[in-house]
Length: 624
Image (cartoon, rainbow, N blue to C red; front, top):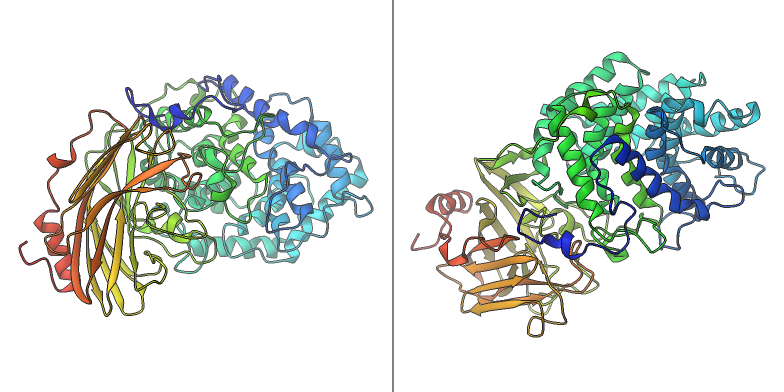
């Protein structure tokens, strides 16, 4: 997955179980074969009436019936484009039988009365099926079954969806009903379309909800934009609305391409990352909608390189079922709403199959990403992205997240890398268990470690990004970040009314073996620097503070807490600080390449960075 000459976490974790393994993923036929390979392992798990697919027993937040509907419906995101593009699937009768059972109130496998719950999410896949694969999903049904399906889907209009991308689920259901002549609730459809319009920002960006603090994350491309392009590509609905979605997608594509590195990996950030190759749903949806927002060759490269990157990872069980996790099976890093069927949302990556082999996308040559000579500021996402030959790194001002576990890990770390994925916290978040990777953690007395979570303010000044945050009552931190991949600078001014301990860490680095002293990790640690090396690359941190010097040491990670590597260490700096104001500064380096620059060759944070900190906090280090 990494660049030439570098192993990357993908190659070290390769083999294992993956339905995409061995597929070159370069042609339309390859993608057709990929969809079949991903869906066929589900067939033994259909219920007798075929309405429910139970793939496991997870502690998910919604009822079993919704979980089993999820297993039934999510494969349609790949199967419907397959049908729309003219490709055969020999098992459509199984899904039609499931529709008959699941929508019949008298059947024991009835999906239940739709309400404002997980069923709304899965109804959208059925609406998508009616809109794009009517011949397979609707036409063969007996008239009573058609009636039951239409009545069941119409119930989505009785309940206002969650104020988020969920509004699109109603829109897609009604597109499908329009396709088969059963659309009756124009007012409900318009209500959801109006909600979605309120989420739109400038230059193609969305927020995932109406609140000003609603997230800007992967749900913008793989949900909001993807559903808008499905709407536009359907030929249904309102033509002016469809054009608005197209125009926003054209603009957003210019920004979204920077979320990927040269080998196809996206930057892991935010929630729901178990959806994996849904990362390229947006690019695939552009093809479905015949919208050349970037040259077809570049879109093709973004889409196929990402799929090939995922094909190298052990992301499935022995029987070929997609697992919960990211780069490997790890249920502990996913959300409470992630069931065993949830990962099949990834099949939205195959929306491009709705276009036949004659479409120019399929004949285009893959193109690489253009070189990125300067860092790219993306204020809606609160980050600044740089990219080198191997990875993309986002320096982040953070977004608040209080609803789901591990919000600070998913949204508020100081930096996110496509090569060095982040770790989540366990029941205890200790600095020797590096859930604090890419974070500054502070602790008063014997209380818990606190990290950046709630952000009071942030801004971007050219290629520098800053944030103001309060981890504890009586403690304020101003953080300024800058630099270029594969290194960056961090400086903080901490003002506190009490004594504090601090722990700041670089990126987590994977390794093999039971510990750094035994196998797989080389450690260089002295008074103010730690350099870690393994087959995964190098991760290092150097203390650059003129005052408040810190002790350097490697920090061990909890196995399974990192999204990409099962065992990790991170380079760290620890300090003790008296009440008052003090400055912390460091240089962080992480690279998969053996020829990465030496940590000692990197200059400390420049005067311009300190000047920005001083303008924000009224002070800087005495000798700068």
